[in-house]
Length: 459
Image (spheres, rainbow, N blue to C red):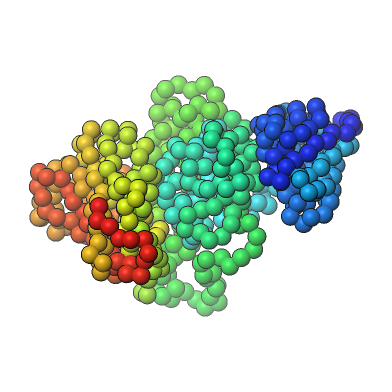
């Protein structure tokens, strides 16, 4: 290791590096940034923001990754009227140790406070997701349905919204993110896993009220009542992470990220990943089943727009629909159908209905989502162009574990049962018409939002 000289630069009020010495400009580019452009060195960006917010000069040692080297430098930043002055000195380089440029144990520490873990491939596409917080359930459900899409499609990156192309991971590390369904601010931490991809951890940006109740341990011997909720409270959280690891490792093998592999073994790995997803889906369904059957279960009465929910659900499943050349016809962007129901639960119902429609309707057909309201009740219909259902099938369809004789399609027979229970818990219902040979037509009914200013319309 050897000491090096001084590097300096200037950032604007939006934390964009607008002037830099040759060394700092080279680091900026090696970390995936541009000049001018948002500061691409995560630790330096954090220091500049802290100084700007506090309105006072700050200085400390920062560490970051520069290709095959870990660099440590003394960073001094001084906020000024039109930006921030940056000076870096006494830096040293060393070979990168296992775990990247962060201090030893940094990833382990972040995992302790993270409330969601997402495993990504080398292109930052979602491989698996495990969310522990109730207000992240909607995002987690969307990610599970959107496996293979970039994780940035499921969050809002307010500070980086001007970037149109895919962002380098160093620009995204420690970025502030917004998540639909959560009022809390979040930070994204990205940890490289070599050629296998990245581990994305979502961490609350500050300490706030966690939107779920903690369960106090009971000193008494367990009785029948104490087993209530054990799947969602104990088993599901304990099983998600190891199953997600199995899926991620199998996907790494299947996609040959770890090295050359014969087609036969790649296929085996794909089967393992698919079986893992099926098992994870069953665990999630059992946890939901337990929740909806619990005494006193009551979803939150959110003010929602059914037309917007329809467009979101279709967007989440658009890739899956395209794979089968199925067109998803959704309400127009300006359409509004105000209703009362818990947003993430309504989205869960719609994703289940759309999943079924895409799975069982013929390829190269259309699935249509329509919404309407009479001012007292609001409805959303999902109609496909499949074989339809007989009255005998309709009578059985919403029963627990009912598969209508199907097998090997990845279903658990719980989706429609849970969806109807959720709809009824929100003061509505979920129904289907017997229309053999004319496609299936599922209708979700909810109370209309009579106090909204959205301007209800029929679609």
